[in-house]
Length: 340
Image 1 (cartoon, rainbow, N blue to C red):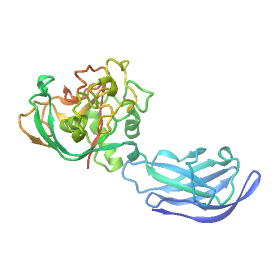
Image 2: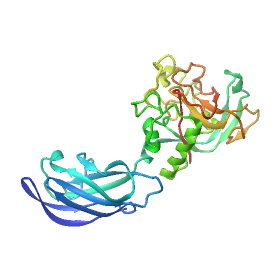
Image 3: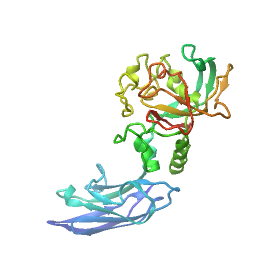
Image 4: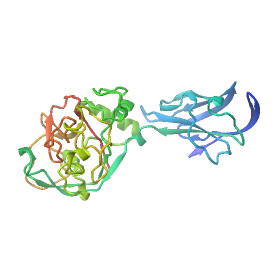
């Protein structure tokens, strides 16, 4: 829902007298008290940003139309002040647009639009996983992959990619990764314990219920769920098609979603970084289960998928690993799931 303020004003920008119809379109639940004025060669917009959830920020954009708001084009770029991502609530926010740096002239009926959007929701892309029954484990791997057993899972969503350094920094304000200067690379050097703090803050900001996948959910998604073609790795029998591993990674992480996805359209479930699961590590049971969450207690948490230094054996969709929940290392990251 939007509301607006309409006024007729005259503005002289260096050489021409323009008649502006200024229409400010904003989110009524987030922005109040919108005002504007000309200051020399610039236009200054002020507003109050309020009624956000605790800790939440938004992205603010300013648009200009020269046909009375019929078309808007892209957001204005020569703007400074309280604009862009990460804007916190508060009064007397200000945007300054350097008009003549961005436009050589303005003609027609000029309109403006201020837009507020949540800056986290659109950045974490999730893939729907239809629930079903699958065979968990393998008779072709290590002993802890046995016995193979039937698992039935409900619908859920899983991250299309591993959580990136940018996504982590947007929530936590820091980047713990060893391989930095790569916003689209997976965040690493994060422990299971670190991720619990991340999840608390992320869910507070977004009013969502993101969490780590259970080990069963992870394997089901890695195998392609009800679209599975029975591949050894997540999306292929040829590891180099879908994974950054010890033969092709150059001993470092790579930007997410650069290789082929699996049957669901999910990337990097084999290779790039090991991915934490929510479960305590324990032996498999020999009977059918529904939505299992692993042992009630333990000393190690589950890791899945292999990393940039992983061999073919570790990058298999059924392969398991375990480590202490406070462990941090450059091949270790995670991805998110959420309920339907």
